[in-house]
Length: 414
Image (cartoon, rainbow, N blue to C red; front, side, top):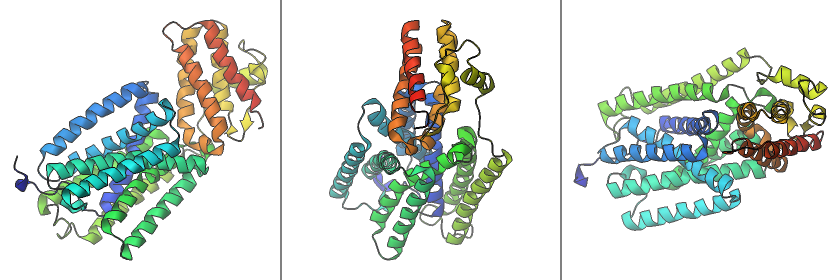
């Protein structure tokens, strides 16, 4: 393929670009979590699936000769998922501290930029019009997502920001970057700074919408949030495709339907619709947080010891710095009852509720007390491992569940 026939392969950097970027970041993360936890595929299989999809999408993207919105933004969503999973792999599987991951990905991004500039003499976004430049561009995009995940999680966890403060802080940093641009800072520098910051901003906004109300969120859940964001993305990308077909990439902002005012109006409207619908759905749910469907029976077990629960389990009333953990304790009590009765298959089924509930609440609980959260997280993983072993034994399962319940009792009021 002759490179002189190529046109620019990336979109014009407009308000619509940034709104789609933030929405793509959020939907990418929630979808990955859904596959890994709710759908039960696990991190390894989810990573493999996302890698295959990403490689396939990038092959299609590289074979195009001009910016094609639906292909480009599909790649961004998949890169968002894989970049997040890459950081999670280093943190959760290899045990690499977030501070170290942040430093490593910062160095990698600097290396990508240095080689890119040395080879091409420019880092201008508008100059992505050859295969080699596009290769550097997507390498940088992937690294920024991994860096944004690591840096955002590190700041949120180390400083105990929480998702609400995180949204305000990262949003404020993006605003400061825009002001710096208006005051004369370089376009390339401010673009990449903002690109990194949109990842933790999108994650914070997603957590704000999905977390239960008792954790400070709007309790929409991952599924509703993903569908809401996906609808907004589709609407904006369809408009992008129509404008590119009509005006081309470079001139899409000059037509009567594609001017800067119209672009701001569409981007602002999309953001406003998402916000209004999100708050509306949250208000319609009332003030009660989501509860476990078996919580009534399990709560009797926790408070009275009925249904065959052990005395130790019946003493759990865990309210800690993490918050009220009763909804997790009632599931653990139910699992313990089944293990005690040697119903390991039933315990394995029930522990899935604990895995999903704990994963869903991570963003709200973890910033409150990282040390306690990690201790409980490790012990929940031990319970999952024992029950999901190829040949689980009652003794191993009982030991893991008892340790977890003991920790919940130890945290009571602490």
